[in-house]
Image 1 (tube, rainbow, N blue to C red):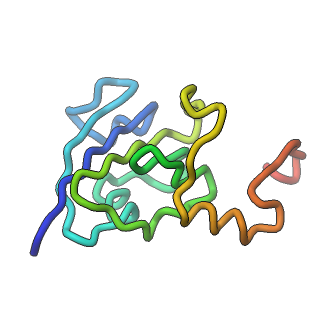
Image 2 (image 1 turned 90 degrees about the vertical axis):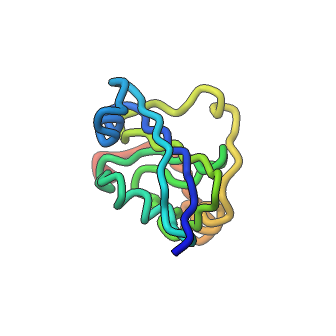
Amino acid sequence: MATIRVEAWLYGPVARYAGEASQGSYAQLDLELSEGGTVGDLMRQLGIPAEERGITFVNGSLAALPGVEADLDLALYDGDRVGISHRKSMWPMQYRFGAQLTPQLEETFRQRGDRGIHHAYSEQDR
């Protein structure tokens, strides 16, 4: 079966899932997936549990947020770059004034009653 190469960057505590490639606060891996592989396949290969995964970017586009895993079925292609942060990691500074969204995440927000935006959180929301 044909394969693709994906560059994965892990930030914060999820860097430990890179094993010896971990630099402590981050890790960079060049991984091989089966052609047609998805972000979900990548997550399973790395062994990162959903409850630890925070913000995820695919080729610079926001693909997932904590509790909004709109990217699990997102197909990856040869040469794609995936950045995965831990749930407790901060939003990357370069995206604080807006980030392009993947079509899958845009559609997920469109379907939600709150459109994915909260201005205040209550104890009930936690």
